[in-house]
Image (cartoon, rainbow, N blue to C red; front, side, top):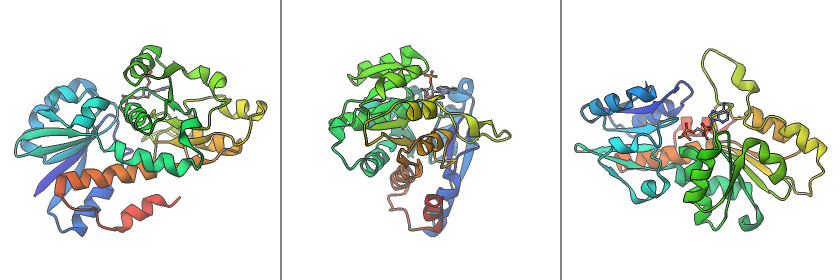
Length: 280
Ligand code: ATR
């Protein structure tokens, strides 16, 4: 029996076990995928036992960058992004990859029919997920602007990818002229034992701003990397203000498929869990 896990803190929200366990069953692979809630201080200890215990893993908030020093090897792409969301234990060699990048192009292309180059996208957040989005947009020839709660984190990411940056409040300055906003923070994500996530958004005041400020059409498309809930407070606000929205399940499924291929060498089967997640 092979063992896989998702490493995060918190990790309750993750649907990865559902998706991967179903995929293993469909492919008749004897494997089990579980959640591992690992506080940041425990990450080193956890990774010391990982080699013996697990054949592979996904990595989620807040460990995508912090995990790198505990790996034996990192793929060239993940090294450039400086964020890892997938680990393969290849006969004792622990290798890190980034499969978030596989989902970003389809999500962005789905969102924009207009030329991306003139979309002046805003990325909200400056963590590992934001780094993957910034990397892909840059590869697609687009320079995003990074807005983040902690300005120094935004500045660091912006320097690495040669783009503009600012604080979250600056959205009012940059939204006019912007055709795409991508949330790459965990604000608004499902939390077990509380319903307050339903009221949380990284851009409080967005709805009022969009209603008050006469923007030239089309209004920006708003994308969220969060897939649980599908309709986050950010997306609900954007929709109420007349914006198109794109939910995070496209990205989630694309990264999951690529992780599965890296672990097993097989394509993910067309299993009902994969299609169920795409429904509202
Ligand atoms: P990941 O690697 O999955 O992207 P991360 O590295 O912990 O996770 O990054 C989380 C992002 O969400 C960061 O940009 C973080 O902002 P800071 O750089 O200020 O920490 C952002 N974030 C998390 N909680 C937030 C909150 N309550 N309000 C605004 N931004 C938040």
